[in-house]
Image (cartoon, rainbow, N blue to C red):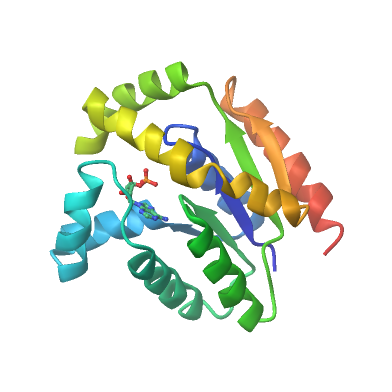
Length: 194
Ligand code: AMP
């Protein structure tokens, strides 16, 4: 299986590049942000609980996130692999993901981290907020908190995957196609060792 963590701060381009990667490699896209927004839309208890945290730009508890990912992986037993987008965001989530995949006889192939400067992230998120309908893309204070949460709690995961020799950094500013080509080169190289 080809299992990719597409990593980076909010606004780095994870969603855009995931769409292109899953089309090329036939993978299943698991975006925890999208899954949570679907729960909110459906008005579930989980959605109601998550919304309050998401509207402030804070993280949803690990147990909720891991439970969601566990059921999505189990529901797709014939998958060629997964693209994890916006997950893991904490070390607890990363360790849980390793365990879930290990139990299925597989693991993470590669962690690709999109690198984008903070000023660019803020302007991309505000621009997206004009059409995304997402409250957390429309307010500069919430955006600043999301970037702070990323820096404080999530960016350490680069070290987690670095230790496993699975981290590759990709510069995330420029033409979407160029960034996509660079991501594909890293994936193709890692896939050869599978
Ligand atoms: P995203 O769509 O990835 O930008 O996520 C939007 C929001 O959903 C985040 O600001 C968090 O509140 C929540 N969220 C998404 N994924 C996770 C995760 N893996 N762990 C905790 N909270 C998450």
